Amino acid sequence: MLLKSRRMKSINNKIALAFLLLFSSGIAIAQEVIKETAVDTIKKTNTGQKQKIDGVIAKVGDYIILDSDIDKSYLEISSQGGSIKDITRCQMLGKLMEDKLYAHQAVQDSLKVTDSEVKSLMEERLNYMVEQIGSMEKVVKYYKKSSEEDFRTYFFDILKEQKLTSEMQKKIIDGVEITPEEVRNFFKKIPVADLPVFGAEMEVAQIVVTPKVSDAEKQKVINKLKEFKKEIQEGGSSFATKAVLYSQDPGSRATGGYYKMNRKTQFVKEFKEVAFSLAEGEISEPFETDFGFHIIYVEKIKGQDVELRHILLIPAVTSEDLKAAKEKITLIRKRIEDKEITFAEAAKTMSDEKETRANGGALINPRTQDTRFELTKMEPTLYGQISNLKENEISLPILDEDQSGKKKYKLITVTNRIEDHTADYAKDYTKIKDLALKEKQIKAIGKWFDDKIKDTYIKVIGEYRDCAFTNNWLKK
Image 1 (spheres, rainbow, N blue to C red):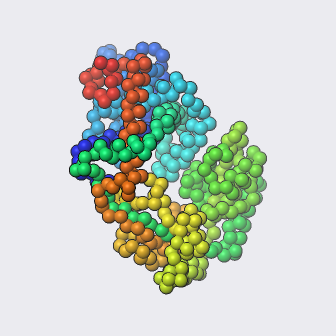
Image 2: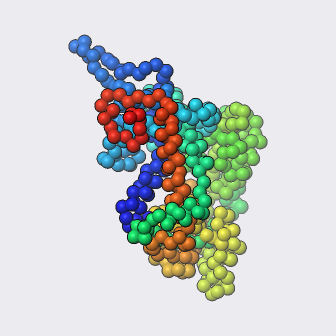
Image 3: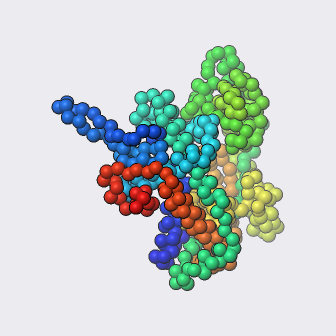
């Protein structure tokens, strides 16, 4: 979004900063919960003199913050590609204290965060980290822990605190609602000269044709999975080893196909049905989902949670299959251009993509959950495919390949193009409502901080008492 004035820039910067703090996963720093007055950690040098190696710089309720936690925060941001040059130590401490107050108050309010929730979240995060870094050993080494068990304990504490923080944040803003009258008043208060300018946007639709895999290729995969099952049951190999060597699921391959799930976990229906039909120690027969063919091995059942491993194999798409898919989508394109059928009608009746078929192929922006895509924030691949299309022009067939290697052909069209424009109440009501709601939520958060700081034991130690904090941590 492009903004014309300092006032609107200030409003939006505050909104962006607040929601970065609200919905970020948090900075990965372990904290201790203590009951006693905090003291510095001391060690003796070779000369017998005492030397401060780390110190408590703040306490919020039962949580402490060490001086080294600020350094770890800088390191964490840098490791994720963020810039730290404009972040002062005072600002970083303020952010850490906000996190601690959220977590402290969540405990006081008895907000429920179960160990099973945290463990499930931990497995999801670990699977991603292992996929990115290469192995669990590398993850442990990156975080400078002595063992996987040590790292898991450390990471569990981090995630539990983050979960408490997010639950508290959610509780604060969930009750904040905004009326059309409040949105109108918010908009009216913005001087005409200061109205925001919204960037160029597009609405996009697509038709997808997935190559039809031959029965022969499917049977090859089924037979291979049956062979794996037999070898595992006869003790010739472990399920985890087979998954590492052969599974085509990039999200779990490195961890031996491991997933932890319950009935609320977001897995495709077919996968969940098989997983919850198996007894502990049982291996399924091969079954099919939209991703390919699987077998599942249930390792443990703990209450509502199932710990399992799976192997995914994707049937090969032959050159003949691809050729047939391209011919089909080329024919669909010709029928649309010849006015035999509209793009939306073709999408509803001939597209293989379930998610967009019912809406005439319209894509949903994952950032905003509406159909508009702002050009400056568009995913680069999609931008490259549509940037040169005129309104209602249809692209040539595009061969697309996902992370697992599955190929498909698609047609893309721009159904609506919205140029740069000054905010209009009628046309941009949704965006204006979001800005007004976020401003109201920020005020609610500010009031919450003012109230809870007064009622919570808070102490800032040493040179950090000279910081100009946004919140009244020093209770002056």
